[in-house]
Length: 290
Image 1: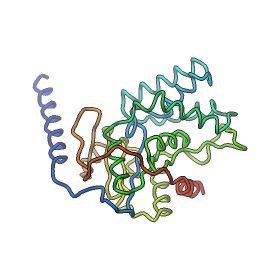
Image 2 (image 1 turned 90 degrees about the vertical axis):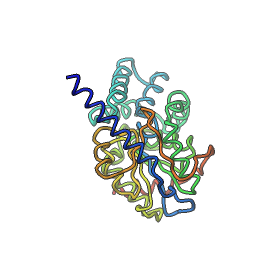
Image 3 (image 1 turned 180 degrees about the horizontal axis):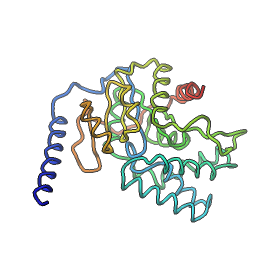
Image 4 (image 1 turned 60 degrees about the vertical axis):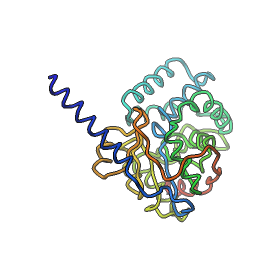
C-alpha cells in the first residue's frame, strides 16, 4: 500500500511539473493588443469567484429577512458541498435556482438590484480569484471586451461584471411584469450547451471571430463553450475538465493550490475597463429564447 501511495504521489508530482513546464514555455503574446475581433468569456462560479454566486446572494437575502432559517440551512449545505466537491451538482443548482425564484417572487427588480450591490460588498468582493481577475484585465488592457457568462441570475452577474470593470454579463433571466418578479424564468437557465449558444449569438452580434476569442471555466459542463473558441482555458478545473483539457492540450490555471499562473502576453495592470455591452447581451439572450 505504501508503495502504491508513493507511486501515486510521484505521478501527481510529475503531472504538476509538466503543467508548470508548459506554463514556462515561451508562447506568442496573448491576448493580442488591439485585436478587436477577439473577446473573452468567463464563467463565474469557481472561475472568477470562489463558490457559487447564488449561494452568497441567498446568504445576503437571509440577512435581510427574505426567508426563514430552514431555507438558510439548505443554502449553507449546498454551498459547503460546492466548495468541497469543486463541481456543480445539477440537482443542487436547480434547487438553489428554484429557492431563489420563490424567495424573490413579488419583489421589485430595482429592489433586488440595489440589494445585489450591497451583497457583493458583503460576501463576494473578497472571494474574487486574483489570478482570474488578472487574466480578465489583460484582455481589457489589450482593448478587448470581456463578458461573464453564467447560470447565475443576470442581475447578480451584471453587478459583479460592473464592479470588476468588465464589459457586461450574460446570465439566467427571471421573469418580471411591471418591474415585479413573477417567480418564473424566461427561457431556460444559462447552463451547459445554452452558454455556448449564447456566446455564439453574442459573437455574431458583435462581429467577433471566435477562433481569436478566449473562454475560461472550471467546469466540464462548459466544455461546449470552451470548444467554441480558439483559446480555451481550464481555470481551477474539476477532474473531468482537467482530463479533457490535457487531452486537447488546453491551457490550465489552478489558483486553488498555488500552481504558477502563466504569463498572458502583457502584465495585468490595475484599472477599470469600459462598462458597456448591455445591448449586445440582450440581443444574445433574446436570440437564445426564440
